[in-house]
Length: 497
Figure 1 (cartoon, rainbow, N blue to C red):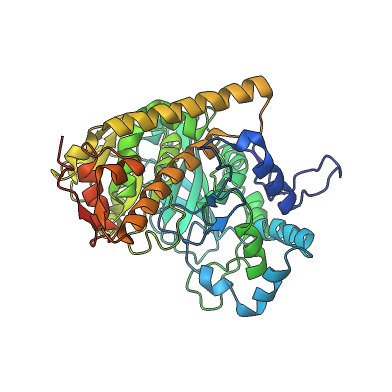
Figure 2 (figure 1 turned 120 degrees about the vertical axis):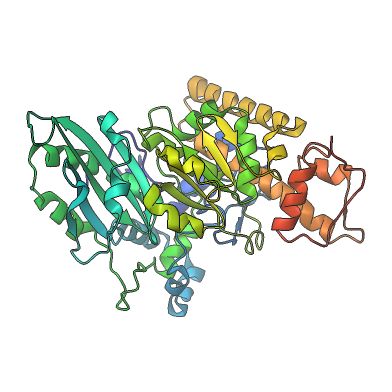
């Protein structure tokens, strides 16, 4: 087994010792029941206590209703490739008998999660003559072109350690970087390497963070010692289909059903000491409401920051969480809001073809490539060169009110954690559910107005969406256009403020 980081909490369906059965596995249904029944989970509007999970915007739109009338987000993989192929008809019969097979489904989910995830493991080194170079990899025939520039971010020589999330084709990668001083004229006094992996899903990569951190230290101290990495790959490697099209085999249908019924979003399992969402909210403040609108409009968002880049990759993840929608059928025709995580100049051609994405970079030259992005975020400064989007950077009255409510809910959660020892609730749950509910509220209202005899958006219907009839008018017009609500009329009274 790979050593687990003590900074990263367990996934709910992993092997968690039960209080009643020491060393046993907590059944999935029991965990969900406990979490849904817990009063501490009531972190959003009254009557909504479900936790949910989705791969982010653009994913599957199926949803699950819970007894209190709220709808939880869909359960999807962070990459849709190969998902439909996995839902074979011969396995569907197992879904109808979930009650009698609950224990076995939980066992199978654990087993499936523990294997068939890693498609490649590699070591990248910085050479004083050649620059970044791929030193070693498994499998040998894996296309890893360009990974040497993703695993060691530009400017990493200024930091001693870092971790980097990135995208490579249809896969996601995680690499741990370390910079060790050495008494070597040839290496110019420093040895820099990264050890990384590729997987079909970024949400599970956190499991191997501590392993990669340990391995990169070993590679710096004893270069060329690859046997632990070879053993790791043999234990964790994914099974590719015979077609060789690079799509990883998905979870069997009955196990997938267990995941759908499991109430959880695809957390990256944050290892940042302050917590991803806490850091994100404190860093951007009210500006997260601007980012929320831009994410919901599926704009191309590029975040610049000097190294270390690990915490900035978490900001990419948080931006994706802003645009979750769990109403069936909504968003299927709009571009998928795709996380690219860290990008560099080698990714320019790939970004040119993207209609919607969020990414981060350490290379200042991207700011000059204005055709590659719609919004450029430099530290807390959110800016755009597109005249049609500039008014969206101004906060409306409704934006400030939503941020005030989010802040209040966070304070209540923190108080509950401190005073009552609430270890179940988390800021990540609160953050994701807050924006999920807001997004669902908007599209539920739009759908109701569109189905009414008079499909006209009025002051009342706009306020019902939690928007400002005046300050959010332009945002609303963009929203109607992008999501195909072209049959809706906008009242002339909704004039610009």
